[in-house]
Length: 251
Image (cartoon, rainbow, N blue to C red; front, side, top):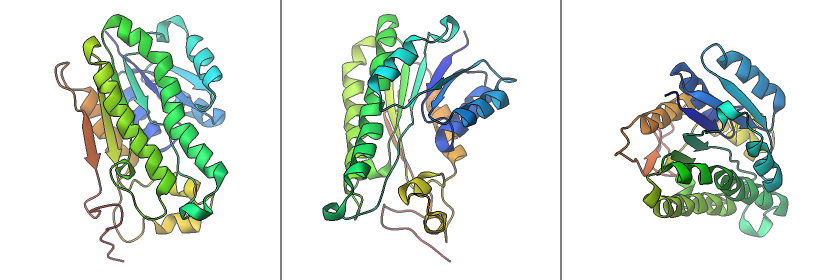
């Protein structure tokens, strides 16, 4: 039976690369995001490979999340795989100078958004006693680095939620795991530095960062394991990275 995957934050980076790889392997897709045109472009690209449904919503709005998922066409309502990928970092300020708007955005998307989407999808998995959830965390959820404060807190929350999900859903045979990347070259730093592309580019200079496709390959490996295997928590960094603050830059 063809599986259906629900991917948040599918318009770019890890989410987009995962959608592309899943489609190439015949997995039916529900791709979600806020940027309508990019979702339409991705759907057009992937439709020759698999069935694709587009959901345009902001994970921060719990009512819209619930209503939109409830409105899925019948053929897409059986969700086998949930990839909680939507997330962001805003700013890199010390805690005493932090922007309240940035804090709200990170906590609302990285934590509450993940919860809203999961809450809307989990009951059907529980009812069927099957399903697989991959929460995209970060090395920032494993250690705190200078000026990372609230972003790190949000990813530590993802780490805790991942563990809590695994415990609570254990009785239903639902697999739950997290993939926690280090430095991946995506739009992440552009968002963090509020569109300052020059500053964002310096983050990835002097070493070879991970690519979104690297993480997509890992996610596909995780969901491809037999049903008795659950990869519960995986940390992946580029070879040049030893920690959040130690990166071997040669240039």
